[in-house]
Image (cartoon, rainbow, N blue to C red; front, top):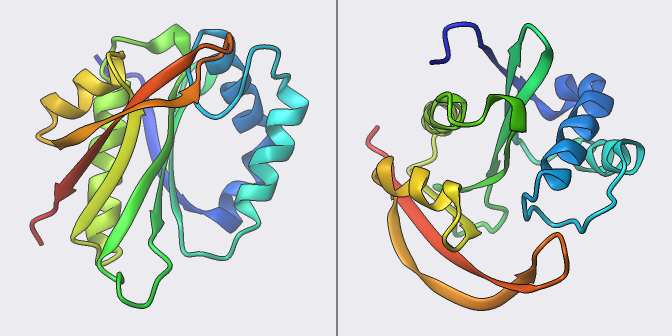
Length: 174
């Protein structure tokens, strides 16, 4: 249940003030085994620096933050595709749900907010990839995302083992 969780949409510039909290969230997710570009041992300072760099990009991205009584508990980004011939497409990136609130609907709510933000941005197609066999893969399938396929050994897990990724897309009704 997500009743005690508040969601807000921010631009990257507005979200920059949240870089430290986003770093803590990212570090907690990696410590919990989330394969999201980093290996075991990621500390909150380094993660916060990474977020600060991401949020300095002037690329029109939207961030949706989730807060509960304990603080920041989730985030997802919608990043417009850059090429001139893809003004209709965006990427869903770095959807993170703090381990303390997993399996409570926060991920599904973040995804719904991301889709709404994408529509408001004029996007009609979203793409993403996620660890094959993980909770997020099941979440996207339940949300009517279309599974394109699996790429083996795409990235390393937090403990350094090669993992496959599953690619999804979703066409958005306007």
